[in-house]
Image (cartoon, rainbow, N blue to C red):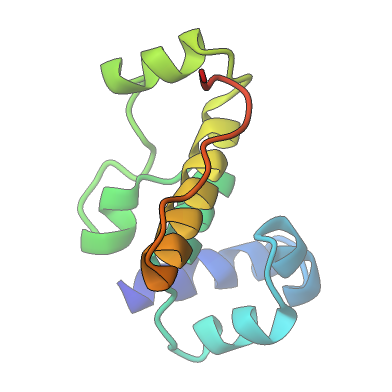
Length: 121
């Protein structure tokens, strides 16, 4: 896994991007990107952002097995689109936000509030 993240970052740098620009795209700090380039392993949320932002298969990032690009729209994401999300990237980033809220709520012993586009209640 580590080598593929390094591959992605080094490829972006070879194509003219700076670590600061990569960090901005991935909504993280330049020092975090530098750490990944040096071999630190990104957490699950960061891996999701890398996959979504650069249109890479999470499976490829984790295993190195092809295909690199994600497949077409999965049936489980069709419901997300039907609920009003504008794009797969937006839906996936919202999923990361909801996962973070759930983790925080679990730590506090509560239930996270359900808010945002595409929800009911």
